[in-house]
Image 1 (cartoon, rainbow, N blue to C red):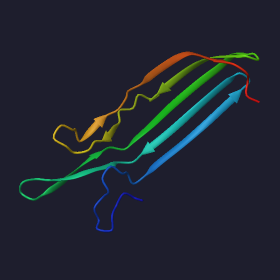
Image 2 (image 1 turned 60 degrees about the vertical axis):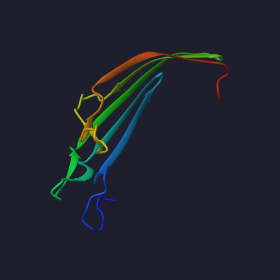
Image 3 (image 1 turned 180 degrees about the vertical axis):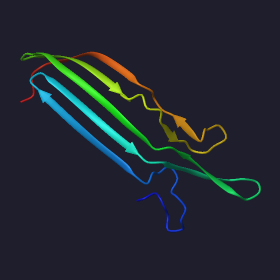
Image 4 (image 1 turned 120 degrees about the vertical axis):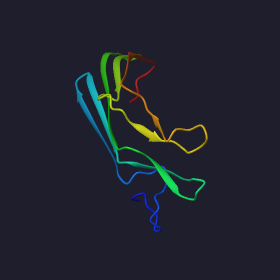
Amino acid sequence: SNGALSSGLNIPFTAAHNAKAGLLFELYNFSWYNSLLYRSETYGQRTFTDNGSSMVSESPAFFLWNSFLRYQLLDKNKLQLSLFVRVQNVLNSRYYNTASNSIISLGSSPQNPLIIVGGVSAKFGRKAS
């Protein structure tokens, strides 16, 4: 769907174009996964004013890049130990999702800025064959 109805009106909360891609790189104990998301301008919900005119709220297009890195420290029979770092919104893009139109909602709601999370992952038990 291109986000439009045959009547010429747009379907609320849709975008004409969406694209997703992922890329995984692995080398020995190291892995790096990247995901990319592009979403064109998003159509909001049509609202009508007291005088009968209407307006549509919209969210601008955005591009989002997320990344996940992992290094496997230990891979024994009953223990797997890894370090990881997850980075959401690598470019710290300012982007919005179109919100439903109610008395307390915004036309668009801001989404997460750059977020970096790291940690240790441990798996216990027998390795899967």
